[in-house]
Figure 1 (cartoon, rainbow, N blue to C red):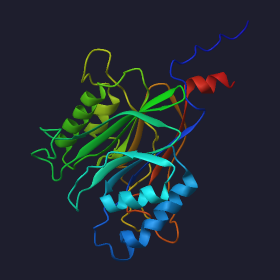
Figure 2 (figure 1 turned 90 degrees about the horizontal axis):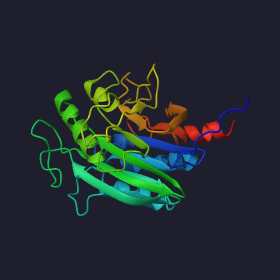
Figure 3 (figure 1 turned 180 degrees about the horizontal axis):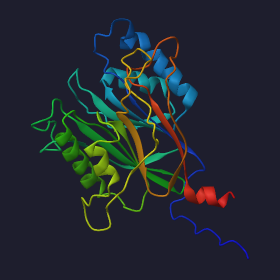
Length: 277
């Protein structure tokens, strides 16, 4: 009996695409030998080697973004606040130039999301950047955020992100990256992975973690030895398959690019996987 032919996806993907996330460690920190000026070239070396389609950066000062734009000439970028105070930390998404950003959104995780602000119980102003990207017939929504430390604030922030995400087409695959200051056992992970209804009927999303237990530790404080916490995530929703996932724990140019290990996940659509058999 002939095998049933796969049903073509309405939003086919390239066979592979690569997503990374990295807490950049804000450039004004007094980190001595690990200061931004000493390690910025290592960030360029890292991404020259990995050549991702999408990178979510957290804690990025404007001068760090300017440097990244200069060493990633083949990339576009969304999420930078302009103008901004010198100390401002952005959550930006760099994307390779063979993708086009068709729509983007930036908001604050607060009671006034369109105004620079913070939640009353949040230690810092927290933000989210999301965009709808297209390459040929392929479309994907990418979301980058950095959550605060309080578990209740994290849950409220996750629900806000999902409410804003419901404004995008619900059938499109989604990639969610960032520094969540919480592990996969946390309540906020449960909000993203539990399919909680947060928008119009049919707009709910269930995200899966791109990593499986045992989850790699991601914070190492420039030591190269993680403290065991998996607080940086790459999650996904929709018709996607994880091909590989890993934390990048090597130094580059004899220095660590950040106090967090970057994460990388390679994806393809499940339809592509079936069609190749």
